[in-house]
Image (cartoon, rainbow, N blue to C red; front, top):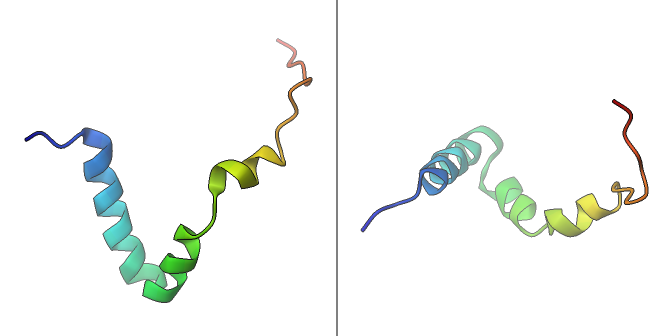
Length: 50
């Protein structure tokens, strides 16, 4: 059974976050729908110059 590279980093990061910011804050962080929250800042009609 292979574990993807991203999964390993997610597990490592999650364990470090628990130590650095605490379990209660990590649970709050996990309740946020980051995709939906980031949609507020997207501008579909924005044209980037080169």
